[in-house]
Image 1: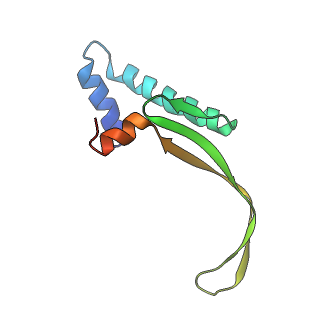
Image 2: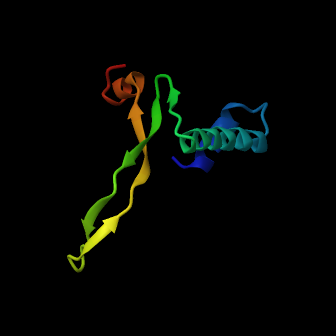
Length: 94
């Protein structure tokens, strides 16, 4: 599912809301998750999962074409851990 499909699904299920309002709500939720993670905060959506940021240390990697050593800088990467409810539904337990 892509963002536009999510917006359309929510708009279809809530005919009292304008599509542009649903789009603004969805975009605001995503923006706030991104902003919180950019600050280094953890975002937890109970039953769904938790978004957090993990740090990867600087290291020496290899260029796959040439085999030459390449310095890779430290970086932050997004991490998602599923919640129990989501994990159970995916495994057919709920």
